[in-house]
Image (cartoon, rainbow, N blue to C red; front, side, top):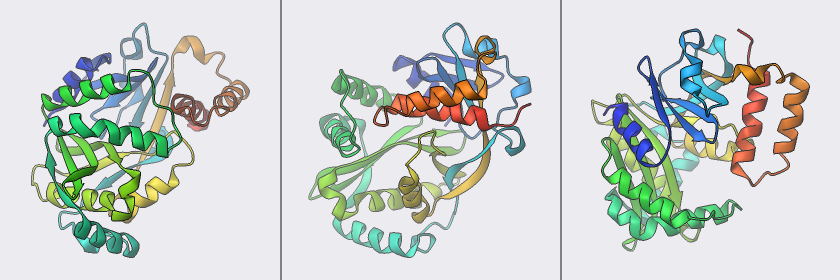
Length: 292
């Protein structure tokens, strides 16, 4: 249950991974690095940024103490007595219906190779996003490499023995990080996501070796509040944390607020491009964070 397993998985998937003072950093997209284990707070004064960014990195994103970064949060569930009483009224009713309609259980990654890719495509189409070149090959490799990674595991929700939703999570230092959650549009009225999240949380939080389940930080992208509302209704909570953006010193001299705002506006011209939306978020957060 260490971060080493996730680091090895990322390397096999083609990411660059560096380790400095017990903290791993990996390129989440070209030229942008993020730290993990994700629950570990970073002191920016104690980071060798030249090593972390190397020759290819321009920007780093990391969690820190509230007073050092832009005020933000990560979304976690840590109730050891997790059950239906932890859910909002609406989510509780939907979850009961989901549990009646669906069978939820752990799944092998080999199962995902046969039907998970189609669920991923369906999710992208529902979000109005295009399916990139090499999509099938990427996910075949993802499932294959996750299958042999320490700490990686998957759960699925089934309707009439057909997989309609699944999640992938990695255990790292006592925390379960849900990194992937996908579902079929045609089955949403069966509430498979509610059944899946509920069953997974109830099972995982009962494990004495797990302190909490995390489903990510506040997103860099705007317009995702409905996703946060679903998570909070299912018993997750917002844990306050700072998030900070470091920009390579060579670029800092030109990263003045007017230029940042201009670049962010240009990136926002492509709302369906996930990378552009995240880049705009990085720039806006950099402008909003306190100066050290």
